[in-house]
Image (cartoon, rainbow, N blue to C red; front, side, top):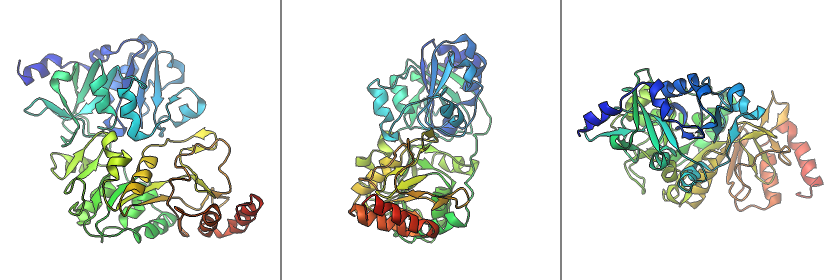
Length: 431
């Protein structure tokens, strides 16, 4: 049978395709805009027909009707990372959460620690060899494809065909659904003067020829905006977005000086504009790979001069970062922060930057604290932390004593809180 004949045989409606799901199944869905809207809408509409089905995803960007506290006995969301669509449900307790390092989710699927009965994913149109590209989210989805009983793809001509280990053959697919709506676009975060000041401190410490991992958020993007004058930067990251695209367009990113995968930008998921998705299409300078390749500290750390830039919510005087909860209340997840902090520590000439504004709530509270708020989820440990940056400067903690760390962090705290932090450090016998 020809590939085209196989395609036509498996082509069906979204309503029919979701019947591949059985009661008790665990459905794997890619990160962000890799989620398939037609399939998840159809699942939502039929959710009362199912029992004990779970939909697992690291970042949901749309709040589908199945994300509903009244129908969790039928279909329940399981988060690897909370976003705007799932945060309230996680905080209320009716959305489940699986703690993880992003890089290790594929291994957890391979070992059966996370089930993968069905995969729902967006995909590019099929090529002449019968392959689809899961370019928007290779992440852990490729591990799900290898394990699943049924792979269901939503094929959309607006999804780019990217190179790398992100292809699925039509012979591995149980059902195909066609859609043509534009891929969801996610704009750049708002950058204010505080973010700009932090970005300047970081950008000054990034050398020509560095390879970058850039997290999502106003501060990482503020760094990006100040790197357009750099030369021969490389990209080895988890997320490719419009900030990185701007560096490519400015000529700052060439990947020429990368010693690991030279000439290639490497990422595991995409989140940005239509312009970004068009840039990704059959671009030989870009490869999309599973997250156990992009984020594995041992592999990412093979890049010399790897620079990681990630944000946190709170940090204590020892350097423990609470990046994913507000005290007991969950907010996001570990994601790839710890992966890339460790990768940068392994890299020859590597640097990791944890960035945060010095205060919150209109300068009412300090984000640099003696101890983390009770219940805070620690994302990056005191043993891994290196550079911490606020709008007041850079604290270099790696290799420093507890006393030295406290002094460094107090020095970049908001001036209004430095005296109080000093007194608290003394009472804790750190100073």
